[in-house]
Amino acid sequence: MLAFVRRRALVPFLSMALLASACGAGESGVTALDSRSNGGGLFPTPESTVPGQDVPVERTYEVIDGVVDFGDAKTPRDYDGFLTAVFGDIQEFWAAAYPEAYGGAFEPLSGGIYAAYPSRTAPIPGCNREGTPATYEDVLNSGAYYCILGDNMAYDDENLLPSLVAELGKEAVGVVLAHEFGHAVQARSGNWNQPVILKEQQADCFAGAWTAHVATGGSSLVTFDDADVRAGIIAMIKVRDPIEGDGLADPNAHGTGFDRVGAFQDGFVGGVTRCATFFDENRLDNLIDIPFDAADPNAGNLPLIDPNPDPETGPGDIVTLIPAGLDFFWVNLTAANGVAFTAPTFAPFPNAGPYPACASVDQSAFPNNVVYCPDDNVIYWDQDVMAALAADPFTGDMSVGYLFSNAYSEAVQRAIGSQRTGEQRALTNDCLTGAWVASIVPPATQDSPVFLSAGDLDEAIVTALGRSDERTDTNVLGSAFEKIDAFRDGVLGGLPVCQQG
Image (cartoon, rainbow, N blue to C red; front, side):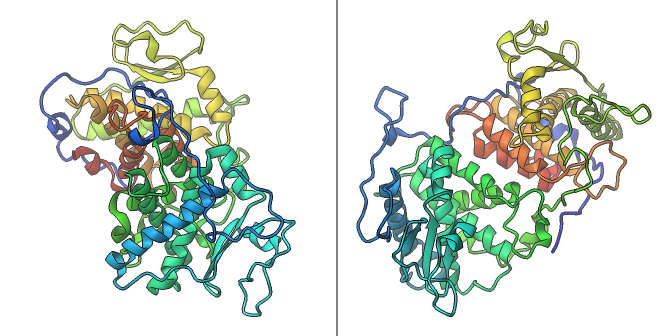
């Protein structure tokens, strides 16, 4: 399978003035990137809140008869009614969307939808030519699936769905099931025999298109608020391929979180007509494949601080290698373009304070954060929070790397005289971080001191999600969608893309 091996050299900025002039005149921009999480979501939600209040109102869903075959011994779940509403709405959605994307009428699912659990005795049609009924273990191994042989679906109601609901909420499960239903659409559109990774990309895109339909009020059966859409994005990351796997070399690969979120966003923004083009474009060229290195003693996750640094090569840790990698990229690049740039230094501070003395930055910006101070050209970082991020397997070393790079990008914007302000300036930092990340995707052709390992891109995406604006109308840091878009643009398009806008 194709891997992302294109190496972007230290290309010129084309015109350094572009970043400075693209947004017109005004102040030189923020002096600190306050990337603390606001903990919210993506879209205004008047339908799900009480007027004058910000507390969401929980919608109740009654079970719609005849949508899901629950079997004969099922323990009722709080989300049963929601799932019947989801499946009902998905079919209504495709009845309207399919003719626009593919022509002709959409044929409803004919084989049924089945809840699988260990105590069930009522048969579930097997996905085999022998007609043998499916066991609970068959469904457990897949979690949820669409079977073309019987034109049916089944989902694990004992482990997968309860765990996802407990962690992310029932709405995230709706996004996962919309993905699975996307395979039924592929069976109807004549695309069943496409490569697995492309089918999975398109199903992620279909899930994004359906999610946008719900989030924008297009459904009479289901409603999503800001946090629900955010949970759906996280679900795309949760169901990524294992980091320790073979990546795109696996013929059954479903994709990394970075790639799956990208496909989901394509559908959310462009709808099913955008998804319909996936098999006609060179999509494999933009899927990034970083093999897992089983020989790496750190398993691809650097410690924050190396407890036993090598006496010859020095520390192998985040606080040494990430700044060195940023210096290598930006110092060379700015020098090649005649820009006066002095690399910032890095300094930690305790979460409880005292905080750095920086007149240009409000003291409230420091806790839980990484902040660039232009007064002394120092990037200050919360040592306690960064240690927690580095140790968490869902965030890891590149979560800290993403925050380090965003603050460093602020120093770069100041050096080139960028006039961008507010949200656009913050999103430019995301894009510049992506451009730097593009330069350290292995295999390497430069002598950078640091390179990405499997899972690093997903860690950056998770961090962008957690450090985004609560709502799209906040316009300070950028919404989760906007931040992920800006970062992905930098990774896939390099510095020229960051100059646009």
